[in-house]
Image (cartoon, rainbow, N blue to C red):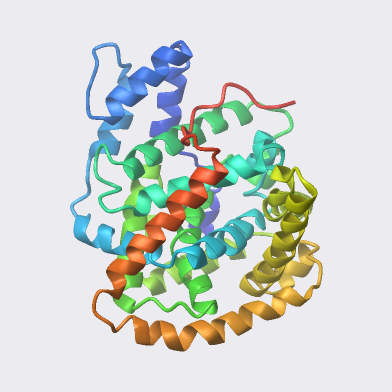
Length: 365
């Protein structure tokens, strides 16, 4: 715990030095440099700090197994809409429950002001990492991971000098424990949520999904000693990280409300508003089941009948899911259907545009 405590004040030195150097470039030229170096080029104009950053990014640790990464991503994508439920209503919400970890999101202002797009960007990132070959150089997941890492460093660069940032209470913005926790939210915590919904992944699938996010975590700048190999390791680290956190605060509730009630933001007609209201009720009900009553009550969730649907869904899914997985060809069909779901869900949320993960220029307010 003492060692973890020190990491609350630690950012990502390679990325932090890189964005400091990139700050001297005009935005368009800076973006061109990032695109070129992400693809593996090394322009003479690149500052030494940026070169060092990309040397780390392009170094593939000896333990990385591309086939396992592909299998792990496929295991998650096959879960389709249930993976979407778990990502939105469990993983992200539990991330918001950290009163120190959520402060960087609160300072950025985007999650409450532009919740639908910001949430779709997160979905796009997870989808890109999980695509077949997604974490190979030049692939969508690898490029998104590099962009997200630099974006996090830029957020640290903008927030740290702010007199509103309380480093004594919150540590460094997007610190090592925050980043390690995010990797676990997209792997271990997601697996636990799927299990609660009755979608069981095999031990091998869980191991491969952890492997995928272990490598993604490396590219994202997480210290290697915080990148877990096995499920017991991941569970131990998650318990240690959560033990450093206080209970959800007002920012936790505001971020969660922006997440679950985002359908209302996009509704225009009375019919759309009606559908949005039903979707919000369903979201609160499923999320309460996935995160538990203690967290749900702390976040101010309403009590509604939809909370009873999730246990029923579990009973309906558990048996047939086990039987179907034994049939030849089902995994391929499920993967294709799951990938189609993620493409459509993300495309709708982004309005047909793509997620760019640009470096922010300033903070609101």
